[in-house]
Length: 197
Image (cartoon, rainbow, N blue to C red; front, side, top):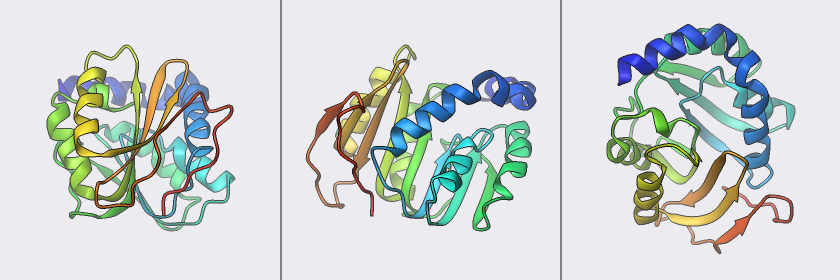
């Protein structure tokens, strides 16, 4: 499955933004309205790094941004985008075997990427390992493994907020060692701003 995903996104990389950019940016903006990112940020399944563009536009002061994607083609496109952000690195890698130390990031995001991993269990174990405080996950509602992902996430993390979008469900989560936050459900129009610090 991994090789097929790699080949698919390599083939799609030069036209990805044109085909899916608007939809992905909408997801990022919806999620970023609900939280404030700071410190070291990991973007797992970063694609063409559309998140970086939004962080720069919104004036986020990120200490360090690291984007990881399994597709070399997507990383090549992403390299042009991260040139706007001084403190940024890109890595070709696999979410089930992350090449980062434990607790490397304040917050890890994985936006519409988990549906592409063969083992949700292994990917979530790795995401949990590398995040110190929070995890933001966006799942396609119709993905075959979304139910399993949500079930495993609820066992490993504290839920801060659920954001229901058109095609996705986003979960804002904290590690149990981080401070517990009230659980809220939102359609994003009426919810207050949150913070990851």
